[in-house]
Image (tube, rainbow, N blue to C red; front, side, top):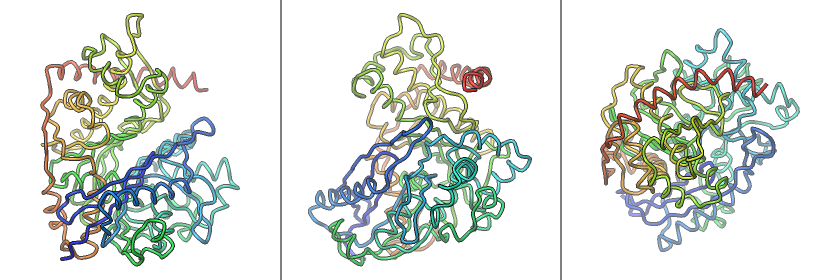
Length: 495
């Protein structure tokens, strides 16, 4: 077994992280480079793919430098799911990346959800019908901006663009493909009905490959940019959500992974594709032998970012003020839907709302209510997982939020269960590294080998729910009632 490390490149919504791991999972070096999420018109949430490409190179060089110049034996990739990018025949972008947060297709999503076959489509593809979905975005482009729909030679995602420019062949890993709304989960191919709704033929999408597929070798040009040896194998990797489960060791039955970055999610690993009959949950592939079932919330860390910009204070100050505010924010309840919300309702029409706002409420109250609102939305997802008949015996969490002691405890309080936190915050990156190890033979090519390797993840701390947990359960019920009662009013405001 080679002693050379493994490099994971995790292309996120607002930053790219590169991490060099030893084959035993120790971190040798990491780099992190951010970029802006542009909003050129109402509902838009796009990125410049060339800026992302530059950030990837910067992050990789930083990681290699931090590791004392050690070079990896393989590079594996992770990426935020549901992005849509049009490219030309050479693989170069012909426009911006439409991220999962782009909500301009909301009306089209509503039309598709009202179809008689909507739930059947969800069950086949595993992807809820929502503006986040590339299927829905393509249907929107076809209806509203046909010239943009027709312009690209093919449609892809940000990870496929990065891997292709680095030297990889055309390929869509089955994990990210399963989050497009265009892939039949059981047949592992592009779905004919979904393609018809999107206005595409299969040749305008990349061929689907396993998440452990070696899809090429690092080109000489990319090697110079990344300061790595040319010819280094490139592994397709997977979506950041499923990889967070793997990187947290949450691939055994009953172990739920929670992640809160820009957005948030709860996911449970299963050994065959399974969909909630009521359509509240997604199902995405991790490997040929494992899938994850759960729900994503659009509004995670982005809520704290908004508060920082709006209140004119840095996030750490706001977290300190929120921590000093009593649980329940002195009667203030927030529905933090700043971006079109997803699980468990998958109806992005309800915007953000403060209820019972009074003169006595200050910045700390508003911030605490917003963060409680994020966790309460995740509680609704947890309850949906249980309602679908899946047992949850343990919760493990990862993401940028875990750097805040206050937010870590708040999550346990609101979910009403103990929450374990792994050492470090490299969940998705470590998951990608494990896929890379399996791809080049450092792990056996069996499901148990991946699970056994993931079992080595160390849970450094487990937080028990505090005395405020019962109050949060009551507020969870209020949130569900508010969703129902405000939907009609908000619809009038938007019309």
